[in-house]
Amino acid sequence: MEKVRIGVIGTGYVGLVTGASFANIGFEVMCLDVVEKKVNMINQAIPPIFENGLQDLLTDVVKERKLLTATLNRRETLEKSDVIFIALPTPSSADGSIDLTYIKSEVEELGKELRTMDGYKTFVVKSTVIPGTTKNVVLPLLEKYSGKKAGIDFGLAMNPEFLMEGLAISNFQKPDRVVIGAIDDRSFNEVKKLYLSFNCEIQQTTTSGAEMIKYAANSFLATKISYINEIANICEELGIDVSEVAYGLGLDERISPKFLRAGLGFGGSCFPKDVKALYALSKDLNRTSKILSAVLGINELQPMRAIQLLEGLMDIKGKRVALLGLAFKPDTDDMREAPSIVIANELLSKGAVVVAYDPIAKDTAMAVLPNITHSNSAEEALKDADAVIVVTEWKEFNNLSSKDFAIMRGKNIIDGRRVLDWKELINNGFNVKVIGQSPP
Ligand code: UDX
Image (cartoon, rainbow, N blue to C red):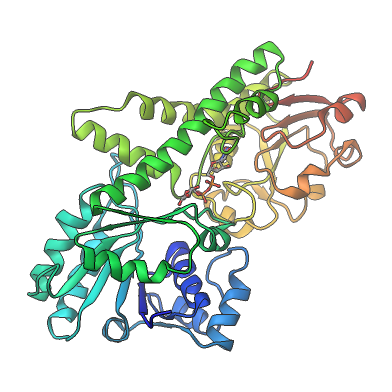
């Protein structure tokens, strides 16, 4: 393995997982952040975010092998790195387009440091950015503030991440592919050196091509989800089990069984934002995407299916409704764009009392949903509830049976994620409605 030193700017989910995973391979990594608390935590091997396996990984690369350090010092990071990943947030603006403020101001600072520094360095955009950003925004800013020339004095590439929260570390270690968009062969080869131990195809493309691959991939996966959710809604009317349909679809290798789980819609930090951004771009280009518009429309309505199914069973006003699961998906405490937010607020606006339980997202959820009661266990949430909605498919909810739900005052159960044994529940006198199935 060639000795390449890595810098990572930004220690969010993507930056920290990327840095820690490269350190795990044996590279020396320096992570830069502006938040002192995060830097201190990382240097003590304490993950500032919840991610499966990250605690062990940090203990190994920070404490034991001493391959990863975090710092507040930009110059030091640049001096000690050959390849510098930029992994800063690109939040949505009000019109759905992405906000490049963080990236632009960081690139300006990096350029200023580079002006007085020797040696060839390669900058790599890791953040998800609109096609054209690396070439038309990052490159000119770096050149302007450094007074140096891209392709001669420094390299530039775009290397999108395809990490799923909760599985980010294993996704990093076993990717389906690595995409490297580069302004020239030298930049490509500098980044490729980091991935030589990976057992997958490394695709070389342009920076704009790499940026587009990321958006097109996430939008395609989101399309699959909205598609199966729409099929699920039709299945409900016909008494067909959407899982059987999805299974049959997935047996066709051209379709693949992945991302065909019907539920309450997609959330998280990527899908909603990325689909909106690509849609906004398509509009700007006068090539308005009809598919993406439908994908977003379906996803906006899908959490409301839980409310509609519940209203088919009872009047919500004045009732106590338990929500099981709040995080946008299991194995994370992330509440960004979680369908639970829409569901809880709709229940509140209809006059319900909402009591929720999430195995780990309690703290993050309290900040987003301050007007509901946050319980410490499923049992506590279910006690005296008139109805329950399973919102997130945490494993521990799979085992819930009529014995657990007996603690409720009412008998109404909405399974928004298709995890409960509805036959057992119906046999024991519960009224159960399931997304994509609606049992008799
Ligand atoms: C996603 C992409 O998978 C990843 O490649 C990208 O880098 C970031 O965005 P993530 O947001 O962590 O990852 O979650 P993912 O597991 O992909 O799920 C996204 C959303 O879709 C969740 O709300 C999930 O519940 C929902 N989903 C997923 C479904 O409703 N059905 C499915 O079949 C799959």
